[in-house]
Amino acid sequence: QQPVQSPQAVILREGEDAVINCSSSKALYSVHWYRQKHGEAPVFLMILLKGGEQKGHEKISASFNEKKQQSSLYLTASQLSYSGTYFCGTVTMTGTASKLTFGTGTRLQVTL
Amino acid sequence: DAGVIQSPRHEVTEMGQEVTLRCKPISGHDYLFWYRQTMMRGLELLIYFNNNVPIDDSGMPEDRFSAKMPNASFSTLKIQPSEPRDSAVYFCASSLTGGNSPLHFGNGTRLTVT
Image 1 (cartoon, rainbow over the protein chains, first blue to last red):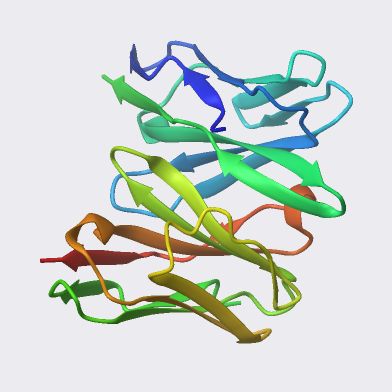
Image 2: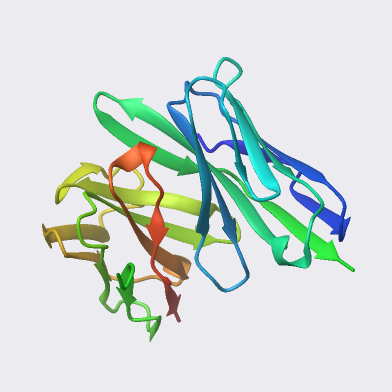
């Protein structure tokens, strides 16, 4: 099954913060986050591995709670360039093979 | 590195025709993925390969779809015969080691079947 993201869409003013959540019904090996701008391919932001680690990328950070099978993406002091659709990608293992399934997506619009 | 290269960028075809999409992954990447993106279904994994071997094709919609990876630098996704509901953007992506490494996406092929 596809991981579920919330909210589906959010509108921010420049400088505001946002949180995007990703929830899976399966045990996760790792979680990826990507951003896709209109008409372009998804672009990698970060990977979180098991262990509840938190990672950061400029003013964008994320956490991964493997017990709850959830991850959250935090956008701080948003900029116009943050606009786009954000996807989580959950990685599950079948034997030695890993499979990445993308979430439903969250559309983020940052305005002046 | 040039990144993942897909061709063609756009394809318009009539229902019933054969369509072949092509992908060249980043050199040295062991995993190759084919995804399809539509407004209704989002980004769906169709099939992925590890070291040229198909690992999971459970996402391939039906027998009209087939994918091959004859060598480490080339993969094809074929639809025969094509139908209007196949219209979508098809992305190819590659990664170094699968789940623990980033996916690098090609620019995609926008397929329109009339």
